[in-house]
Length: 150
Image (cartoon, rainbow, N blue to C red):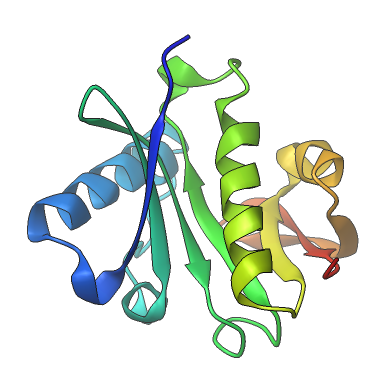
């Protein structure tokens, strides 16, 4: 299995090409694959840190880390996306571990997420506890989950 090259960048420092690649992957996963039309880019993107994972220069994973006080009192991880072709290879675990480590090194608030219901067990395996839900977000069942600070 090829190694993913991980890179963090704040929105303000990203290239137009890099941002375009992120939006393409997010649209492929959240809008096309999940058949869920919604407004993906939002005001949170501008204040967030964005993680990208590349194999041979191709974007294969992304997520954003939202600072505390924007979505929740705690920092938040969201827009977690890996193309369907790479799922089932533990790439999602790797992506989340990199994101969790970044958040925990930067903020001491814990990490709150709004996770799709079918991924509740996946997030629980990473230390998140279900706080609320299920509830509907963009016509998809979600759970609010919290990973306490270490």
